[in-house]
Amino acid sequence: MSTATVESQVRGGRRRFAVGARTWDSIRSKALGLWAALALLYLFIPIFIVILFSFNDNKGRFNLTWESFTFKHWEHPFSVSGLSSAFANTLEIAAISTAIAVALGTFMALALVRYGFRGRSATNLFVFLPLATPEVVLGAALLALFLTINVATGYLTIVIAHVMFNVSYVVVTIRARLEGMDTHIEEAAMDLGANEWTTFRKVTLPMIAPGVAAAALLAFALSIDDFVITNFNAGETITFPLFIYGAARQGIPAEVNVLATMILLVAVIGMIVNLILQRRKASSERPVVLAPAGAPING
Amino acid sequence: MLRLSLRTRRSLFPYLLLGPGLLWLIVFYLIPILSQGYVSLQTGNIEQGYTFNWAFHVYSDALSEYGAQFARSFGYAAVATVLCLIISFPLAYYIAFKSRHKNILLLLIVLPFFTNYLVRTIAWQTILADDGWVVHFLQNVGLLSHDGRLLATRTAVIAGITYNFLPFMALPLYVSLEKIDRRLIEAATDLYASRATAFRKVTLPLALPGIFAGSLLTFIPAVGDFINAQFLGTSRQYMIGNVIQSKFLVIADYPTAAALSFVLMFVILAAVLLYARALGTRNLQDAAI
Image (tube, each protein chain N blue to C red):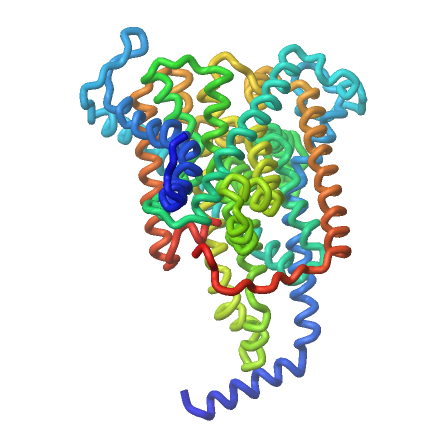
């Protein structure tokens, strides 16, 4: 490129900057804001419909066209037969499978981040694989196993399936938390004679607690929402998503919308509390600077 | 109690930590995938049972019969992934660079997904229904013919998939955009790069890991999805997931279902590896997390 073209480009750039940069910037910024708002609106359109139709006084079994406003579905949301037991199953299975998956996953993440051992990178890849497998394959494969070894599917197999797909999510979430963490405090505990288990309980666990909580929330949310894998391994057991699927053909009762709205409300409240706590923490807490320790002793 | 030297204890400890979780994944993930291979090579029927006899013809039969559904799955998933990228890139960019309420906006992206997947998809049925206002509006402005419909079309299925997997694209994009050092962009503009050039040469390359991770997290579940095709489409829009689920759970033709699901998994793995190579991402996991 000759110096002349460079110069003209530079001058051109400057001129453009001088003339309309400001207005151009504000147009671009407004367009971006508008796009973001529209994208969020798109995400919320069906949610408005779900909430709205929980107040619909629907005629007949289908709840697909708007009739008139009523509170009646909110008065007895569990009156529909089968719905309350399905909902209870869902919450129970989510609680049990989350507890197991978080326990297994936390230890795995700890091993993967804190220890060098043979087969570590292979294990990292292996843990990642279930996340790269479509749900329909996970569900079908597990059913193939249960069919091969003649295990009847039901409550227990749903729990097994949920733990299986949640473990990887837990590992990934907690690993991310562990990776940015200082190891000196743990080393200090060990130097002072604490064994691995005590160090884990008294030092590591309190430090990674927010990561563990996030992982547990994610696992719980994935578990209550799962339809595909559950559908393959449920046998006669009915969960909330399976109830919805089964009801879809004859028309979904508006009570399902009520329960869906309730779950959403719980999530909203949880999020607001979380935001307030974060804000309070950010304003009260000053970052603690740990003096860098000398040579790693246990190294 | 077994007495081991401190050294042995320390070297065994990581395996102890890994053991239970790894065992769970081997027994309920790896072995099932392999047992699917075993089931896929069987012949027989549901009344007399299936027997294993290296029936490789199950694969050729399944692929020739359901090739269309395979192609459709990958086509729909690819279009939906591109649409997700187009919709969520400006959104993620806005949150990362312009917004003062990042946390709130991020929560808003996640919030709709606390409503059950099926309930959300069925809500789209209401929105896209033939007598709904969306169809009426499109008919009135002439974008849709007077007997045209949205529900039970390819458009509806792809729109449903796009909707349902949007956060999987938006969140990784946000993470990678947020990480970009603003000084690099300032440096580019100080050196007389136009805003567009700075975006193309600095922001976009640095956002690539997010684009990569987001595309995978959107594409993989989208290929295997059957809910959108079932609720928003007809059998003419059915994807490979619909076939696998009905073969397994309705018709009980286990070998065909297992063969299709086995092939699906390996095609996806191959596609992921090719994509990783094309984008030059050095480590798959680094990008996905």
